Length: 208
Image 1 (cartoon, rainbow, N blue to C red):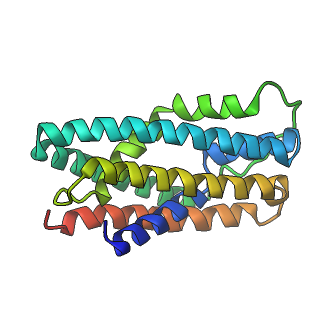
Image 2: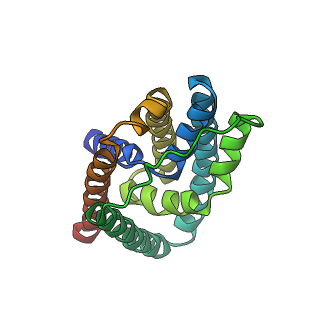
């Protein structure tokens, strides 16, 4: 894989994972229930779940590639359409001022946070759909091993997502209780939305 493609992918991963979403809410809520360690356990649990999705995406996309290059192209175009949808939704959320940054009253921490994090991630169909739409945009069918590409991209995404989630666990309730938390959320939503639209545009102008 070319270095500039990996760099673009890494930047996209960071921008997408920095936007506050359900995973961030889950992490910070656990931080507010207990300690920073609880939020970090939640982040690591989600990261483990991302890796499970990576393996599933690798097997599924590889099977599609082996069956038909045309079928894989269809998956890429459907994925691009889904990224457009996510991008538009994110920008609309920024424009309307909607925000997930609405911390609830801390509750008593219960259960194994790490295991719960894995289940939250693995059982989330939106995560699986995102993996299937996001990873193909950076796969080069002309390269020797597409399966290895998907695996590397998935692992890199899981790692960077976990780093971002751990950062949110450390920031925790401090960030969510700041008076400018909503403004911060809107800015990230706008950046993420534009990036998702840019990724979709990358497919449209691509020769392959």
